[in-house]
Image (tube, rainbow, N blue to C red; front, side, top):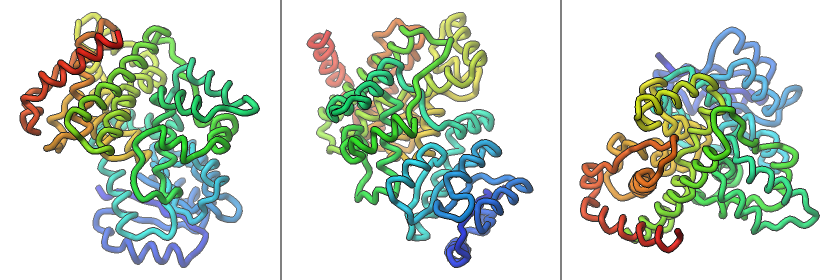
Length: 401
């Protein structure tokens, strides 16, 4: 079945240009063009769409208002902004309802590539109801303690950017959201940003203050399924994996981008557990109960009862948000790296090894019990490296423990 895309812009010439440039895709995509928000909603009342791509500044209903309405009426529809308006106010107003931002003028190949990548994400998450659940999300749930500390720091008369950097960098949800922002086309950066510390500096204090205190882009985690100790365990495990993944990348003399990607993917790799616990309710409670009764890892329990895992859920969301592909890949396949197309050392290999290493040492009910894939390591030429990695990580455990 052809994918369906709705393009919205109040300028007929812009829509004509889009029709012309995307004509070669007509066999794969069914495209509809609407002049303004009201017309777009009328069309959506009559047809369903996989993606809506809208301009921001339009008379009557602007792009941010339109996407908020689409989010309510058609939560399964993916939401993209294609706009020449790159001012601070535009970014702040569209940061929650939009999954991705593309700046005008945009080369047709770039737009086609972004749309194709979004459609390809469907292969990560087969469950249509879970795809809709993830598509609804404005944010990932943040750890309560860090969330409160960040709000307190930003409410000060002279907040410390260094302290804000430390807090955001210690929270998987906040890290993902700031990376979504700085990797959007509105910032026109020459390369992808993979570290939260870089993102914080680029956004700046005033933008962060507005985002957190006014736009409310972060929300604290709430779920009766997980205790405070459970949430802390996820946080501690994620921080440990991020540091160990970077250590492994350093041992491999990987370039800075791989080191940064390994660190960030390690921090983000288990955020899907928080997403599922906070959104699925009793359904995820059954997963947790099954994991204990059947004495299997949480990853296996999720696959058995949900047909997917926390890794796929998180990777799907990160892909929608336009995070770097190496991070999405590492999160998606950190339990089963052989399922990826990776043939060389990458953040995926570092996170897979680091996650399995720390999982072996865990007694938490949330552990996944996933073992290192020796065949995968052999396939990327690292079969003989595992022992050295373990030795180094053991040394760091002793030094820090």
